[in-house]
Length: 423
Ligand SMILES: Cc1cc2nc3c(=O)[nH]c(=O)nc-3n(C[C@H](O)[C@H](O)[C@H](O)COP(=O)(O)OP(=O)(O)OC[C@H]3O[C@@H](n4cnc5c(N)ncnc54)[C@H](O)[C@@H]3O)c2cc1C
Image (cartoon, rainbow, N blue to C red; front, side, top):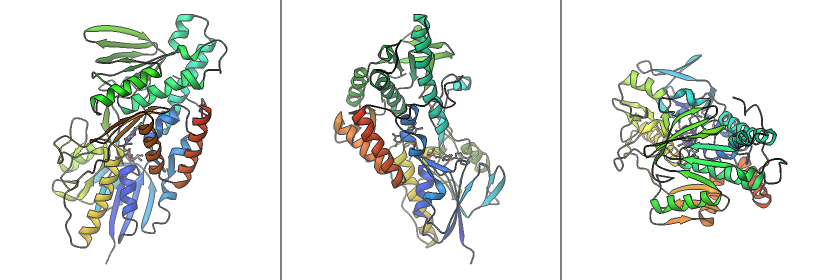
């Protein structure tokens, strides 16, 4: 009898956890990713702000899965699906399947202003992170050489659009860079005079956290001299600044560095699945999945992670966070194994262990539902959880050593301008 073929598109949190859970299953598994590595996105902002190097938060997929004899890793881009013929169509070939898991994630959305992409880079890939790092560090270099005070101030103004977890992390890290890390590095500027402006459309930062934790995160940001603009929208961006609208008033903020941390749009493979199977998408392009994460009328196709909109638990779709993707990956792997044994699985249930967001050194918030924690204990927990979830033991050790060193010296060793910083 021929082996049961499983194809997984995407080696992020969802795809990789599904592949790992199928490592010993009686299946022939092909994992397709357009990158040859798994990326630990929650620590991308540390690369963007010089705290870590790219290699420390990425692990080659072949290395992670090398002991899984039933698994093949393909470096390839999936572009379409032949649903009747049960094949994933690649840019340069095809992969047959009996069960398909699509975990191609999401990217940032500019809410119809895709032209802002080059003016205000978002943070999703290693390239984005090194580009942001380059721009931030180059801004201080330009300011150092600028003699006109107004233009110097423009170089020392950093606008971050979006006050969710990524925006808060970026703003906090920029605050630390300006006030701490670079304190003694320049001769003509005082980096602490930088204006770091965090713009959020809602009336508080971290809107997905309880209001008391948002207030604590705001206070922690203010400690790092981050200026908050709440209830505010960026309405225009150009290479010399942004226009901000807030409660009817318009304001122009001259700034040479604008970073985008607002809005999410699902991978375009969701649209392909909708065209091929008729499945509905939500406004962010996420696929509305069944309670077992399959598509209506297609029990052999499963969509997980940031690409899936799972609305069968609590009405609202589950959040686009790593634990959801990991649990869904494991669930679908179990579902396939159970199906092969002739059994049935209960619908997927997400077990929410709590939410964490960090603002900076000794500064973070944690929401466990029954308890809200802020400050050092939340930060310590954040460090522990992020170290534990780094995929490879080697990365865990490297990051641990780097963090201890950075903590003691208040340094950020990876402050390199490498190809980034250009416009
Ligand atoms: C900056 C940032 C910070 C974050 N911080 C946190 C955090 O602190 N805590 C938390 O829980 N979550 C955080 N998240 C969210 C978390 O990273 C995502 O929820 C999680 O990565 C989703 O997993 P996924 O498997 O659905 O997608 P991803 O992890 O994004 O993986 C998708 C994979 O699919 C591949 N791919 C995409 N399209 C194709 C294609 N056409 N062909 C082949 N391969 C393809 C990609 O290369 C990628 O490897 C953060 C995200 C970002 C961007």
